[in-house]
Length: 389
Picture 1 (cartoon, rainbow, N blue to C red):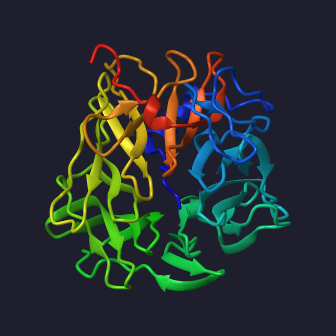
Picture 2: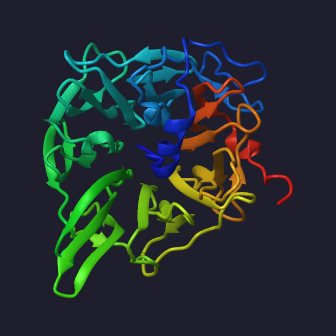
């Protein structure tokens, strides 16, 4: 199941800073590796995974590890294409004819993957499912919208996403099994914008926005939406700030229903952002553990299925703010938010996925400004409080 973020502001900024990873690289000295049995060895620092040649047409915001599966399996994108890794061996997902970009966004504990592919010539996109080693992907939801970039799959094989027609849906075996309708009390001008997670029991989490110019003036708000596994009506999770340009985002949900994401303010001069959590029964607007020491903003993009560990990215924005690298971060569910080591000092690193076996996946930049897909093995043992905090 997807425990990752589409790293909203972080990914956008990375797109302007980084160069995609070059041809397949050897593992850096001193990093962890997988044994033949698939058991991860603990060692300091992130493990660099092999990469495809860089995509000259861009797409860095999708690069790296997006989710983590069983027996050393990791999924994501490299060179603008959907890929997966078994330990440190890179595999391409076979693209349907005519498609030339995409990403694997999620994988369940049985190895079933879900993602999207695109055709740059005409803007067409499609959702797909795939099993390792299969000769081809299974396409569904073919259209022209980019809403399909967020997709998740649960252990029962249910795939949740916003269809290319703009409707949030659940598929199983390629067929639509559920339409994810708006909450009954949703106001005018409300639409589901993203579906970002589905847990083992089938709860689906996503996001909606309201944009409405009515008799009392313009209304705009964003809020997380939960669709319960029992098929009951959707509910909007309470938010602390329902204001213009305040984004209340849910990015992941664990098997107990704990939701992680962020609350951020889009202001180029004085941006704000905090990692955020909502806990069942969702009677209040949730809370934040605070930002990583030494940074002014942060977000959570993923939560492990059962351990309560959340990961994401810390950053500092603003026109008058100091120039600081993006920092991969981990929160064990209590205490302060912790940093994860980067590949090089003063270089960006982003955490996008976390598993119950203490792996964290993402993307990191080396001293030569080259971005690589990475995995932090035994991540909780590597996490630390930044010096000077």
